[in-house]
Amino acid sequence: MTAFSFVYSLHILAALVWVGGMFFAWMVLRPAAMKALEGPARLKLWVEVFQGFFRWVWVAVVLLPISGVGMIHLQYAGFETAPRYVQVMMGLYVVMTALFIRIQALLLPGLRTAVTAQDWPTGAAVLGKIRKLVGINLIVGLVLVAIAAARPMF
Image 1 (cartoon, helix red, strand yellow):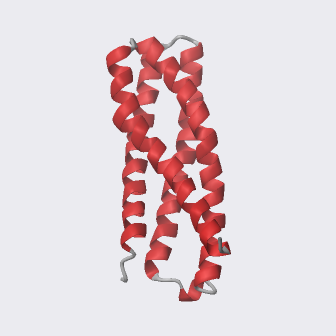
Image 2 (tube, rainbow, N blue to C red):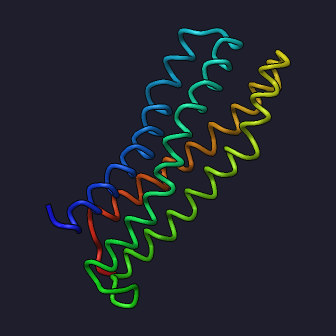
């Protein structure tokens, strides 16, 4: 396996964990939790889900730029010669990371506090905000993946 193949594999796996995890949470877990669980149990579930999933997202947040820069240097010998779509991907990564940090640092503590205090209306409101940001981040992530797959030359 070449150095590029190894770095590329790490990059793809990190993106798969992050975007695939959001897709699963949004499209499968959320609807199932809505059907199967009452409000308090659903909020407790999401606190646990976020705690576990966000550990993996942090791994992706660290690996993606490291592996991305590695690929740029191995394939293009620097940023100056990298195609524009690579720069777009880097910008979208920054957007996704900012949204993730907003959820992790600003909203998740409020959800935990509400669940601990058994303040279910507040918890539901915070979860709704998190859901919207995850939905936006999922869309950005899917666009990013589509750009990576298409490699448009613009």
